[in-house]
Amino acid sequence: MLVLALDTSTALTTVALVASGGDVLAESSHLDARRHAEMLPRLVRDVLASSGSTPADLGLLAVGVGPGPFTGLRVGVAFARAAAHARGIPVVGAMSLDVIARARQQEGPFTVVTRSRRVEVAWAAYDGSGRRIDGPLIQPDPGYPRRGLVVGDVEGVDVVARPCASDLAVLVQERVASGESLPDDREWPEDAADGSGVPTAALLADLASQERWLLPALPLYLRRPDAVPA
Image (tube, rainbow, N blue to C red):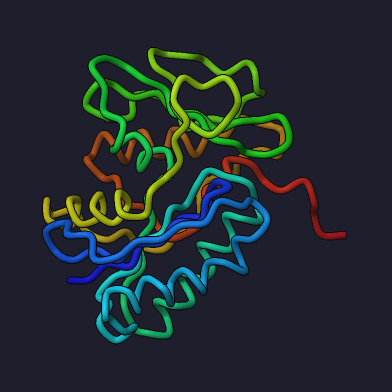
């Protein structure tokens, strides 16, 4: 099964096409926080062309659902949902912090941090095997807890890291191969606009305790937007 994976939850737009067994057929990326919408379709075309594949060959779309800045994150999720609908194939999400953690398994605990909005960050803590043990939560930068090595895309981290689409695709394939079913489409809890995302974090912790890591292809903001209908 060919999986087309993409993530726009950070300044990096990343796309990859991965075959069954984790073989990366093609991947491409572009670093610019203001050009997700412009670059994403171009990268998808490039990846398909480089691999000699067509949209008709795809069996599944995977998208990083954040947390991340509102606009950029929406670009990737909306593209993935629209493309999957057009092809009549499933689309599944995974938390972008989990994707970074998968590639950063350490001897001991570590923390993954990405930009959320303004002077805030989203973070989650992991054990040495890459299993999430706390978060994701939104907190001011600085001010988030630093547990072990800190990786991510904000100032002051020990290692700069962003989600990689090929890691996302392999994570999804591993979970499907383990027997985890694709999630139903549903809304996230009602996180407060001025909160840290505790309701959603509690739901994700409960899912993880059930060995459920695949998520609906819906943006994971951890906060309601500031703007509200008049």
